[in-house]
Image (cartoon, rainbow, N blue to C red; front, top):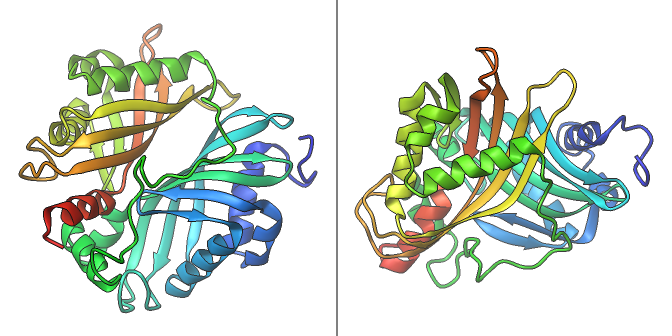
Length: 329
């Protein structure tokens, strides 16, 4: 890969390798090499500007979870080394809550949760990132309800006026990456599936998903079959029935020894004006940033279907937005 350290065989090796090097091998100082000085890192909870702030946040996380492991499940990517590449990296993380921090006093709880991260890299450096941790899974394993955790976090951050503000189009900061991915057929197909679901065409689940589809969703939930898919997407869309759905980025890939795959970064931006997974409508203006991965395959010859789906958004960031606007915080 032109411009990248020759020790990396390819782009997935780079993404998985530097993740282990930074977090598990304690190479935090390598962030000076692997992250650009003015990087923009967006998570649903906040926008972090500059590598020095990223280093500080990394150290705080490792102080709270010193034995954290990040196990790379997949890297779905687009672009070229010369023009820059965008990776959508799916991770299973394991950790014990052994230090005080953003999740409160150390509990010793052993955690397992997923992360999805979109990173733009060029010349051996990442300079733009979108990061979603399954906060709902984390806090539930610690005995919290996501809404209660969000309320407690607002209080610990000094109250509604001084707490960290969640990511919205109004708080977002522009970064150097302006690409939209690629036009591979699997990315196109998955973008169409999600667009149809968000347009209330739930019949697409029966026609495009394998009947035995495995789903891995927010809150650490594993499902099997069409009903689990329907419940998840219906519950989300029902909460924000009039919100604008946008496909922000799409990638499709055909790689040797791997199933056809797709990665979609998407958003919902609108009012909480429906009954769904976020309870009674509040009218709060809410931004939901989501990342979804899909794997396709033809169990029956000539009938490729979506066989595995992974989707994350941050429930606690949604609740934080609702609480800050309803005055409950």
